[in-house]
Image (tube, rainbow, N blue to C red; front, side, top):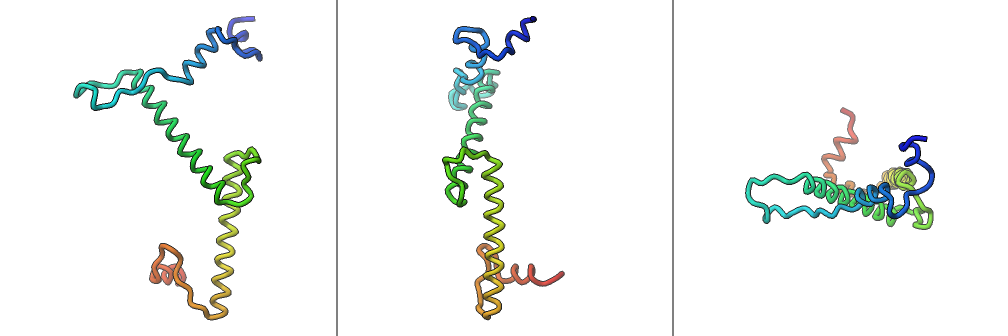
Length: 137
C-alpha cells in the first residue's frame, strides 16, 4: 500500500497528524487583512492578505445566502426548521408557493372583472403599463 492510499483511508486523521494540521490550516486563517488606511500608498497586498480577503469575502457571501434562505423559510408555508431541509427543497417549495399565489391573483382578478369591480394596478406598475401588457402588439 502506498502513502496516497494510506492517507485516503476511512479512518479520520488523529489530532496531531499532518493531515489534521493541513485541514485545520485550511479552515481557519490566522492572517487578518490589513486595512487599506494602514498600508503605505502603492504597496500591494501580500499573498497571505489576498487569501485572507478572499476567505472573508467568501464567508460573507455564504452568510448572505444563509440569511436569504432563512428569510424565505419564514415567509413560505410548510418549511419547518425541523425538516432538515436542503436548499433544493426550499427553492422548489418557494416556486410552488409563488405559482399558487399568481394563480390565486389571476382568479381574483377574473372574479373582480365578472363583478365589474375596478381594481388598482399591481404594485410597481402604472395603469399604462398594465394596458400595454393586456393589449396584443
